[in-house]
Image (cartoon, rainbow, N blue to C red; front, side, top):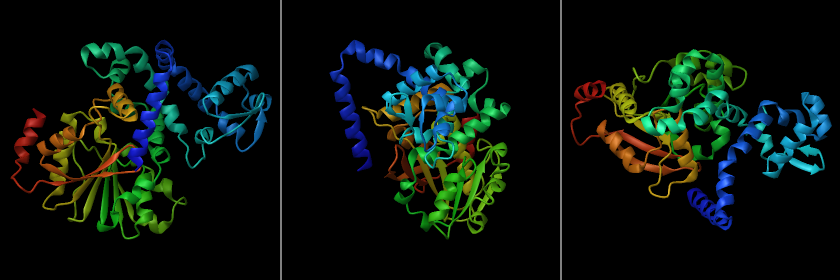
Length: 376
């Protein structure tokens, strides 16, 4: 039902766009970055936080955040015209459902996500390197910054913190309803690979009292994660969660039983096939003699007529990484090459889907030979 509603919404938008004269529609698309830059400025300057639950004149807001009243008015007027903030009467504003998502402490805050995607680090490649990359096939982020994204994060702590914060706000972006679309209770332990500070795993543990979890991510990401949750979540819940640092391109924590579940949320779309095969080969090694289940929550791109949101995510992967949003055929081919098979594709109440994956049992998989092939 969720995906049917999304398809209907896309069809209606497409119909409305066809009613707009072609030159004007092209200009709408060509100037769309004006809106994103205005949103970024209001977010960076903390305007939604300043307004809070109040109704405030532009002069009151400007005085509170020390901004130029006329410039601020024109900024908020533009954002209100596209549904972000509400102008109650001339030069008087309040937060609405959309601008509330820009507030720091909102349960649905995507403030960090807006700041990260519109940061100088992420914006420069779009303006500087996209056209050039069309000729040479390189990653625009690396072309602009001299390093690929994750290497850059390792060497720029401030941006790394912003990036991590943005990833932690994915729950606000997607909601948590999709956590009820899969039966987690039939497992004993989740191994969340690339699980950041564990926020998504904690949301699963809250719904499943008998479940334990291990969160695995880069050491600098999870170094203070456990301590950061103390006092914020129940001690019993925290006692079921452990952390381990490492590099998934080198090794993945080992399975303890057939009732372990490896969880990969939005991991593989950041990787090209070579990197993904290295991770999947490490995963096979980690399974040891057990046969755990693997759950991959990621986009599955339709072909043709790809969903606009998925197409946009795919372009962002092109900009910052060597990854891509894969079609079902591409997912099946990738997993098959590494000795895995998709058992089921679960539709979720989000733009992603959940791929239920297991180790292939119908043939002998020569992992050692495959590892050499990947490395070579």
